[in-house]
Image (cartoon, rainbow, N blue to C red; front, side, top):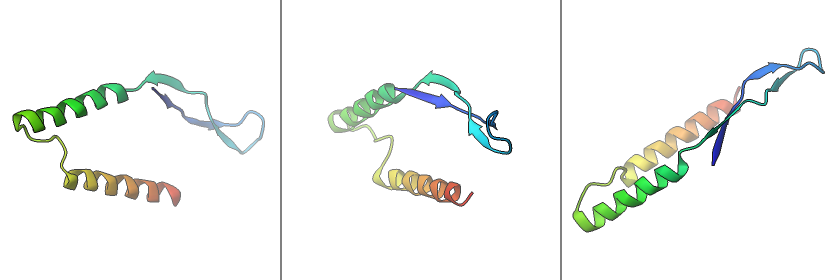
Length: 75
C-alpha cells in the first residue's frame, strides 16, 4: 500500500484556479501495523500482556478523526 503526498498549486490551464500536483508516492506502513496489531492481540490472549489500544482509546481516536473530518468539510 502506498501514500501519496500532494500539494495545492496554481493551475496552468485555468487562471485563478488551484489543483493538486502529482505529488510523491511513498510506501505505507499498513502491513507492518497490522502485523503488530495481531502480535499484540496474540500476546494479550496467550501471555496476559496489555493491549496497545482499548475500546476506549480506539473510540477516542475515532472521535478525533471525525472532528478532523468535520473541520475539513467546513473549509
